[in-house]
Length: 334
Ligand SMILES: [Fe+2]
Ligand SMILES: [Fe+2]
Image (cartoon, rainbow, N blue to C red; front, side, top):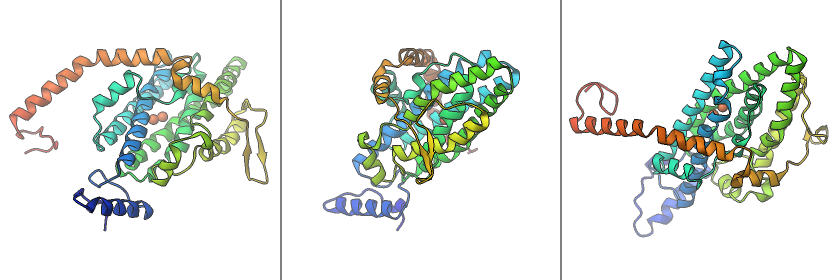
C-alpha cells in the first residue's frame, strides 16, 4: 500500500478505514500526498503553518531589502539582491504547497494584510546598520536552517520537498552573512563595534524565533504526533545555541547572555531565558516595526493590482484559445 492510492471515497464506515490508513502511513513514515485522505485537523494545521511560513519569507524581504540601494560595494549589492530574491522564491514555493491543500493564495494574502494571519515576529525588528544584514544572515537564516532541515522529513510531501531546495538556499544565506561579519571584524574598531551592537540586538529575538517554551506551545503536540514537526521548540532552540557559540568565538564577538556556558554533564550549553513577554508583545503587533512592515506589504499589494489583473486577463485569453501553440498550460508544444 502506498499513501498515493488512498483516494477519498468516504461512504458509510469508510471514513474510519481512511483514518486507519492515514494513521498507518504516519506511523510508517510514509509521505501524505495532496490526493490522499487526511483528517481536517491535519489539513488545517498544515495550511496555518505553511501560510505563516510563506508570509514570513515575503515580509522577511523588507528588513534587508532596504539595504540593497545602500550596500557598500557592487559585490555586496549583488549578494544581497540574490538573497532577498531567494526569499521571494521561498514564499512562492510555500504558497504553492499551501494551494495543494485547497487553500487559495489570494485568500492567504488577504489574511496576512488584514492581520488575521501572522508572520515570524523576528521581522518586526529594525536594521539600522549594514552589520544587521550580516547578523540576520548568521542568526536568522541560521535559526531558519535549524527549524527547516527537520521539515525536509515532514509527513506532508509537497511541504517536505519544498524545504529541500529552501534549505540549500538558506545555507548560502547564512554563509554570506557570516562572511560579511568576518570582513567587518577584520576592519576598523568602529566596524567591530557595529557588529557587536547588531549581535546584542538580534541574539534574544533570534532565540524567540523557535516559539514559546514547550510547556506553553499549544499546537506543538499535535504537530509532533502528525510528524509535521519533528522536534520541540526548546530542542531546536538548544541546537541553535550549540551551533552558534563556537561560531561567535571564531568571529570574536560576545553573545549577550551572562548565563551562557558549556555544561559538560549534558554535553550542551546552558543559557538564559528570553523575555517571553516581549515575544507576546511583538506577536500582538506592538514590535518596533510591525506597523511599518504591514503598511509596506499593503502598499506592495495595491501597487501590484494591475499586474494581477493583466496576468488574469492573459490567462483567460490563453484558456479561450484552447491548448494550441507553444504555450499550453503544461509548457509543452502541442
Ligand atoms: Fe527563506
Ligand atoms: Fe533566508
